Image (cartoon, rainbow, N blue to C red; front, top):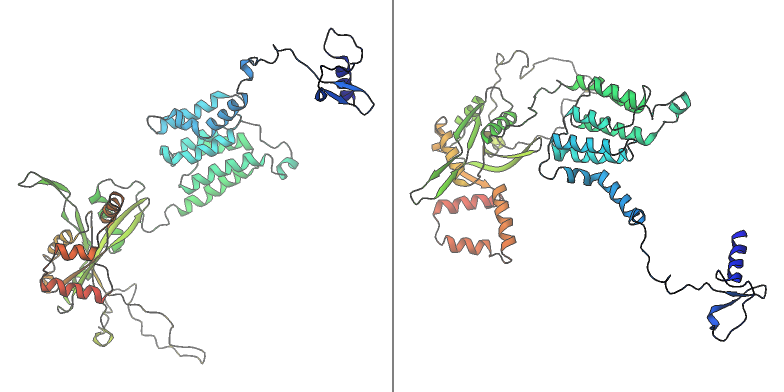
Length: 450
């Protein structure tokens, strides 16, 4: 009410320097400039001089103040990493970004948002498995501010947003298999106190990580080798699951120059075969064909590799011959137990187990090019230790490998219209040999793509 009275008084008085007499009706004023009041008083609008109508420059401290605040918040979230690490993303540049944020403000405003953004950027900088970087992120928190002072604050989860952020840092360490050290505990005690959720998370990690550290019976290296031959050797050893299996390198990757002066890159061919597979292959019926199938993918951490197998069709039930087990083959895990146990009325000798026979696998290999020419070289290398391969027909059931899929995608992006593959095949191979036709009939009978 007081503000309304002052506004009414100013309108009645008018501009400075004029008398306080009430405004008389004048013909020069338009009807829109006179506003009748409830108390039968005529109120005058405010009038300014033409000089006031011009745009006056605002002080520089008030120009784009909101935009500056927005830019600061955005920089603290994600743009700060892009601005500092323009040339290269490494551990040094990541630590530099953290130091820049620490020196910007003594009170560490926006530290929670910055830590969340840093956790998302860690895989890009390659520091997601470094415990020193996680300790540096925890050092961003202000010290002795979020520590509860009494049991009531501790009971009601003192500063829950900051505690959740600290737990998120420890969870990311747990996901990447990083074990916190004593420096991590000292930082958590200084930031959140001894009775807090991050400290409990830290204690759980230290309890379970040593228990599961060596529980895997098939350990795997943390850093994968960059050499494709070494990577193929590790992958095949892991798939075979046989200590007696032998890994053979049939061809190393190299570059050869033809007579025309063209450079031809030869792929690597690495295969594996165990003595038991060689025995089964020697007993295989030579009238039944073998099949080379693939590629099948295998994930090694974040790397995907492809392998091919040499297998046979399942043996028909009427042709199966049960061989007697050798009791001296294994003393610890016998293959057959003859136990004469008395059966009760409720006991049942039959088991409802679905037995699916997919046929024996005789060998496996890995190569960077999955075409038929390269796999023929692998079969030729296998024939040195398995002479029966020269008498058995071998058919190829190959699907599109990674390089073929990439080439097909490039062709689709470069050309809008693709010719019919059947028509193109007829034009490129007008006359085919009878063996190839038989092979195609075998493929169609098994419902596989060419």
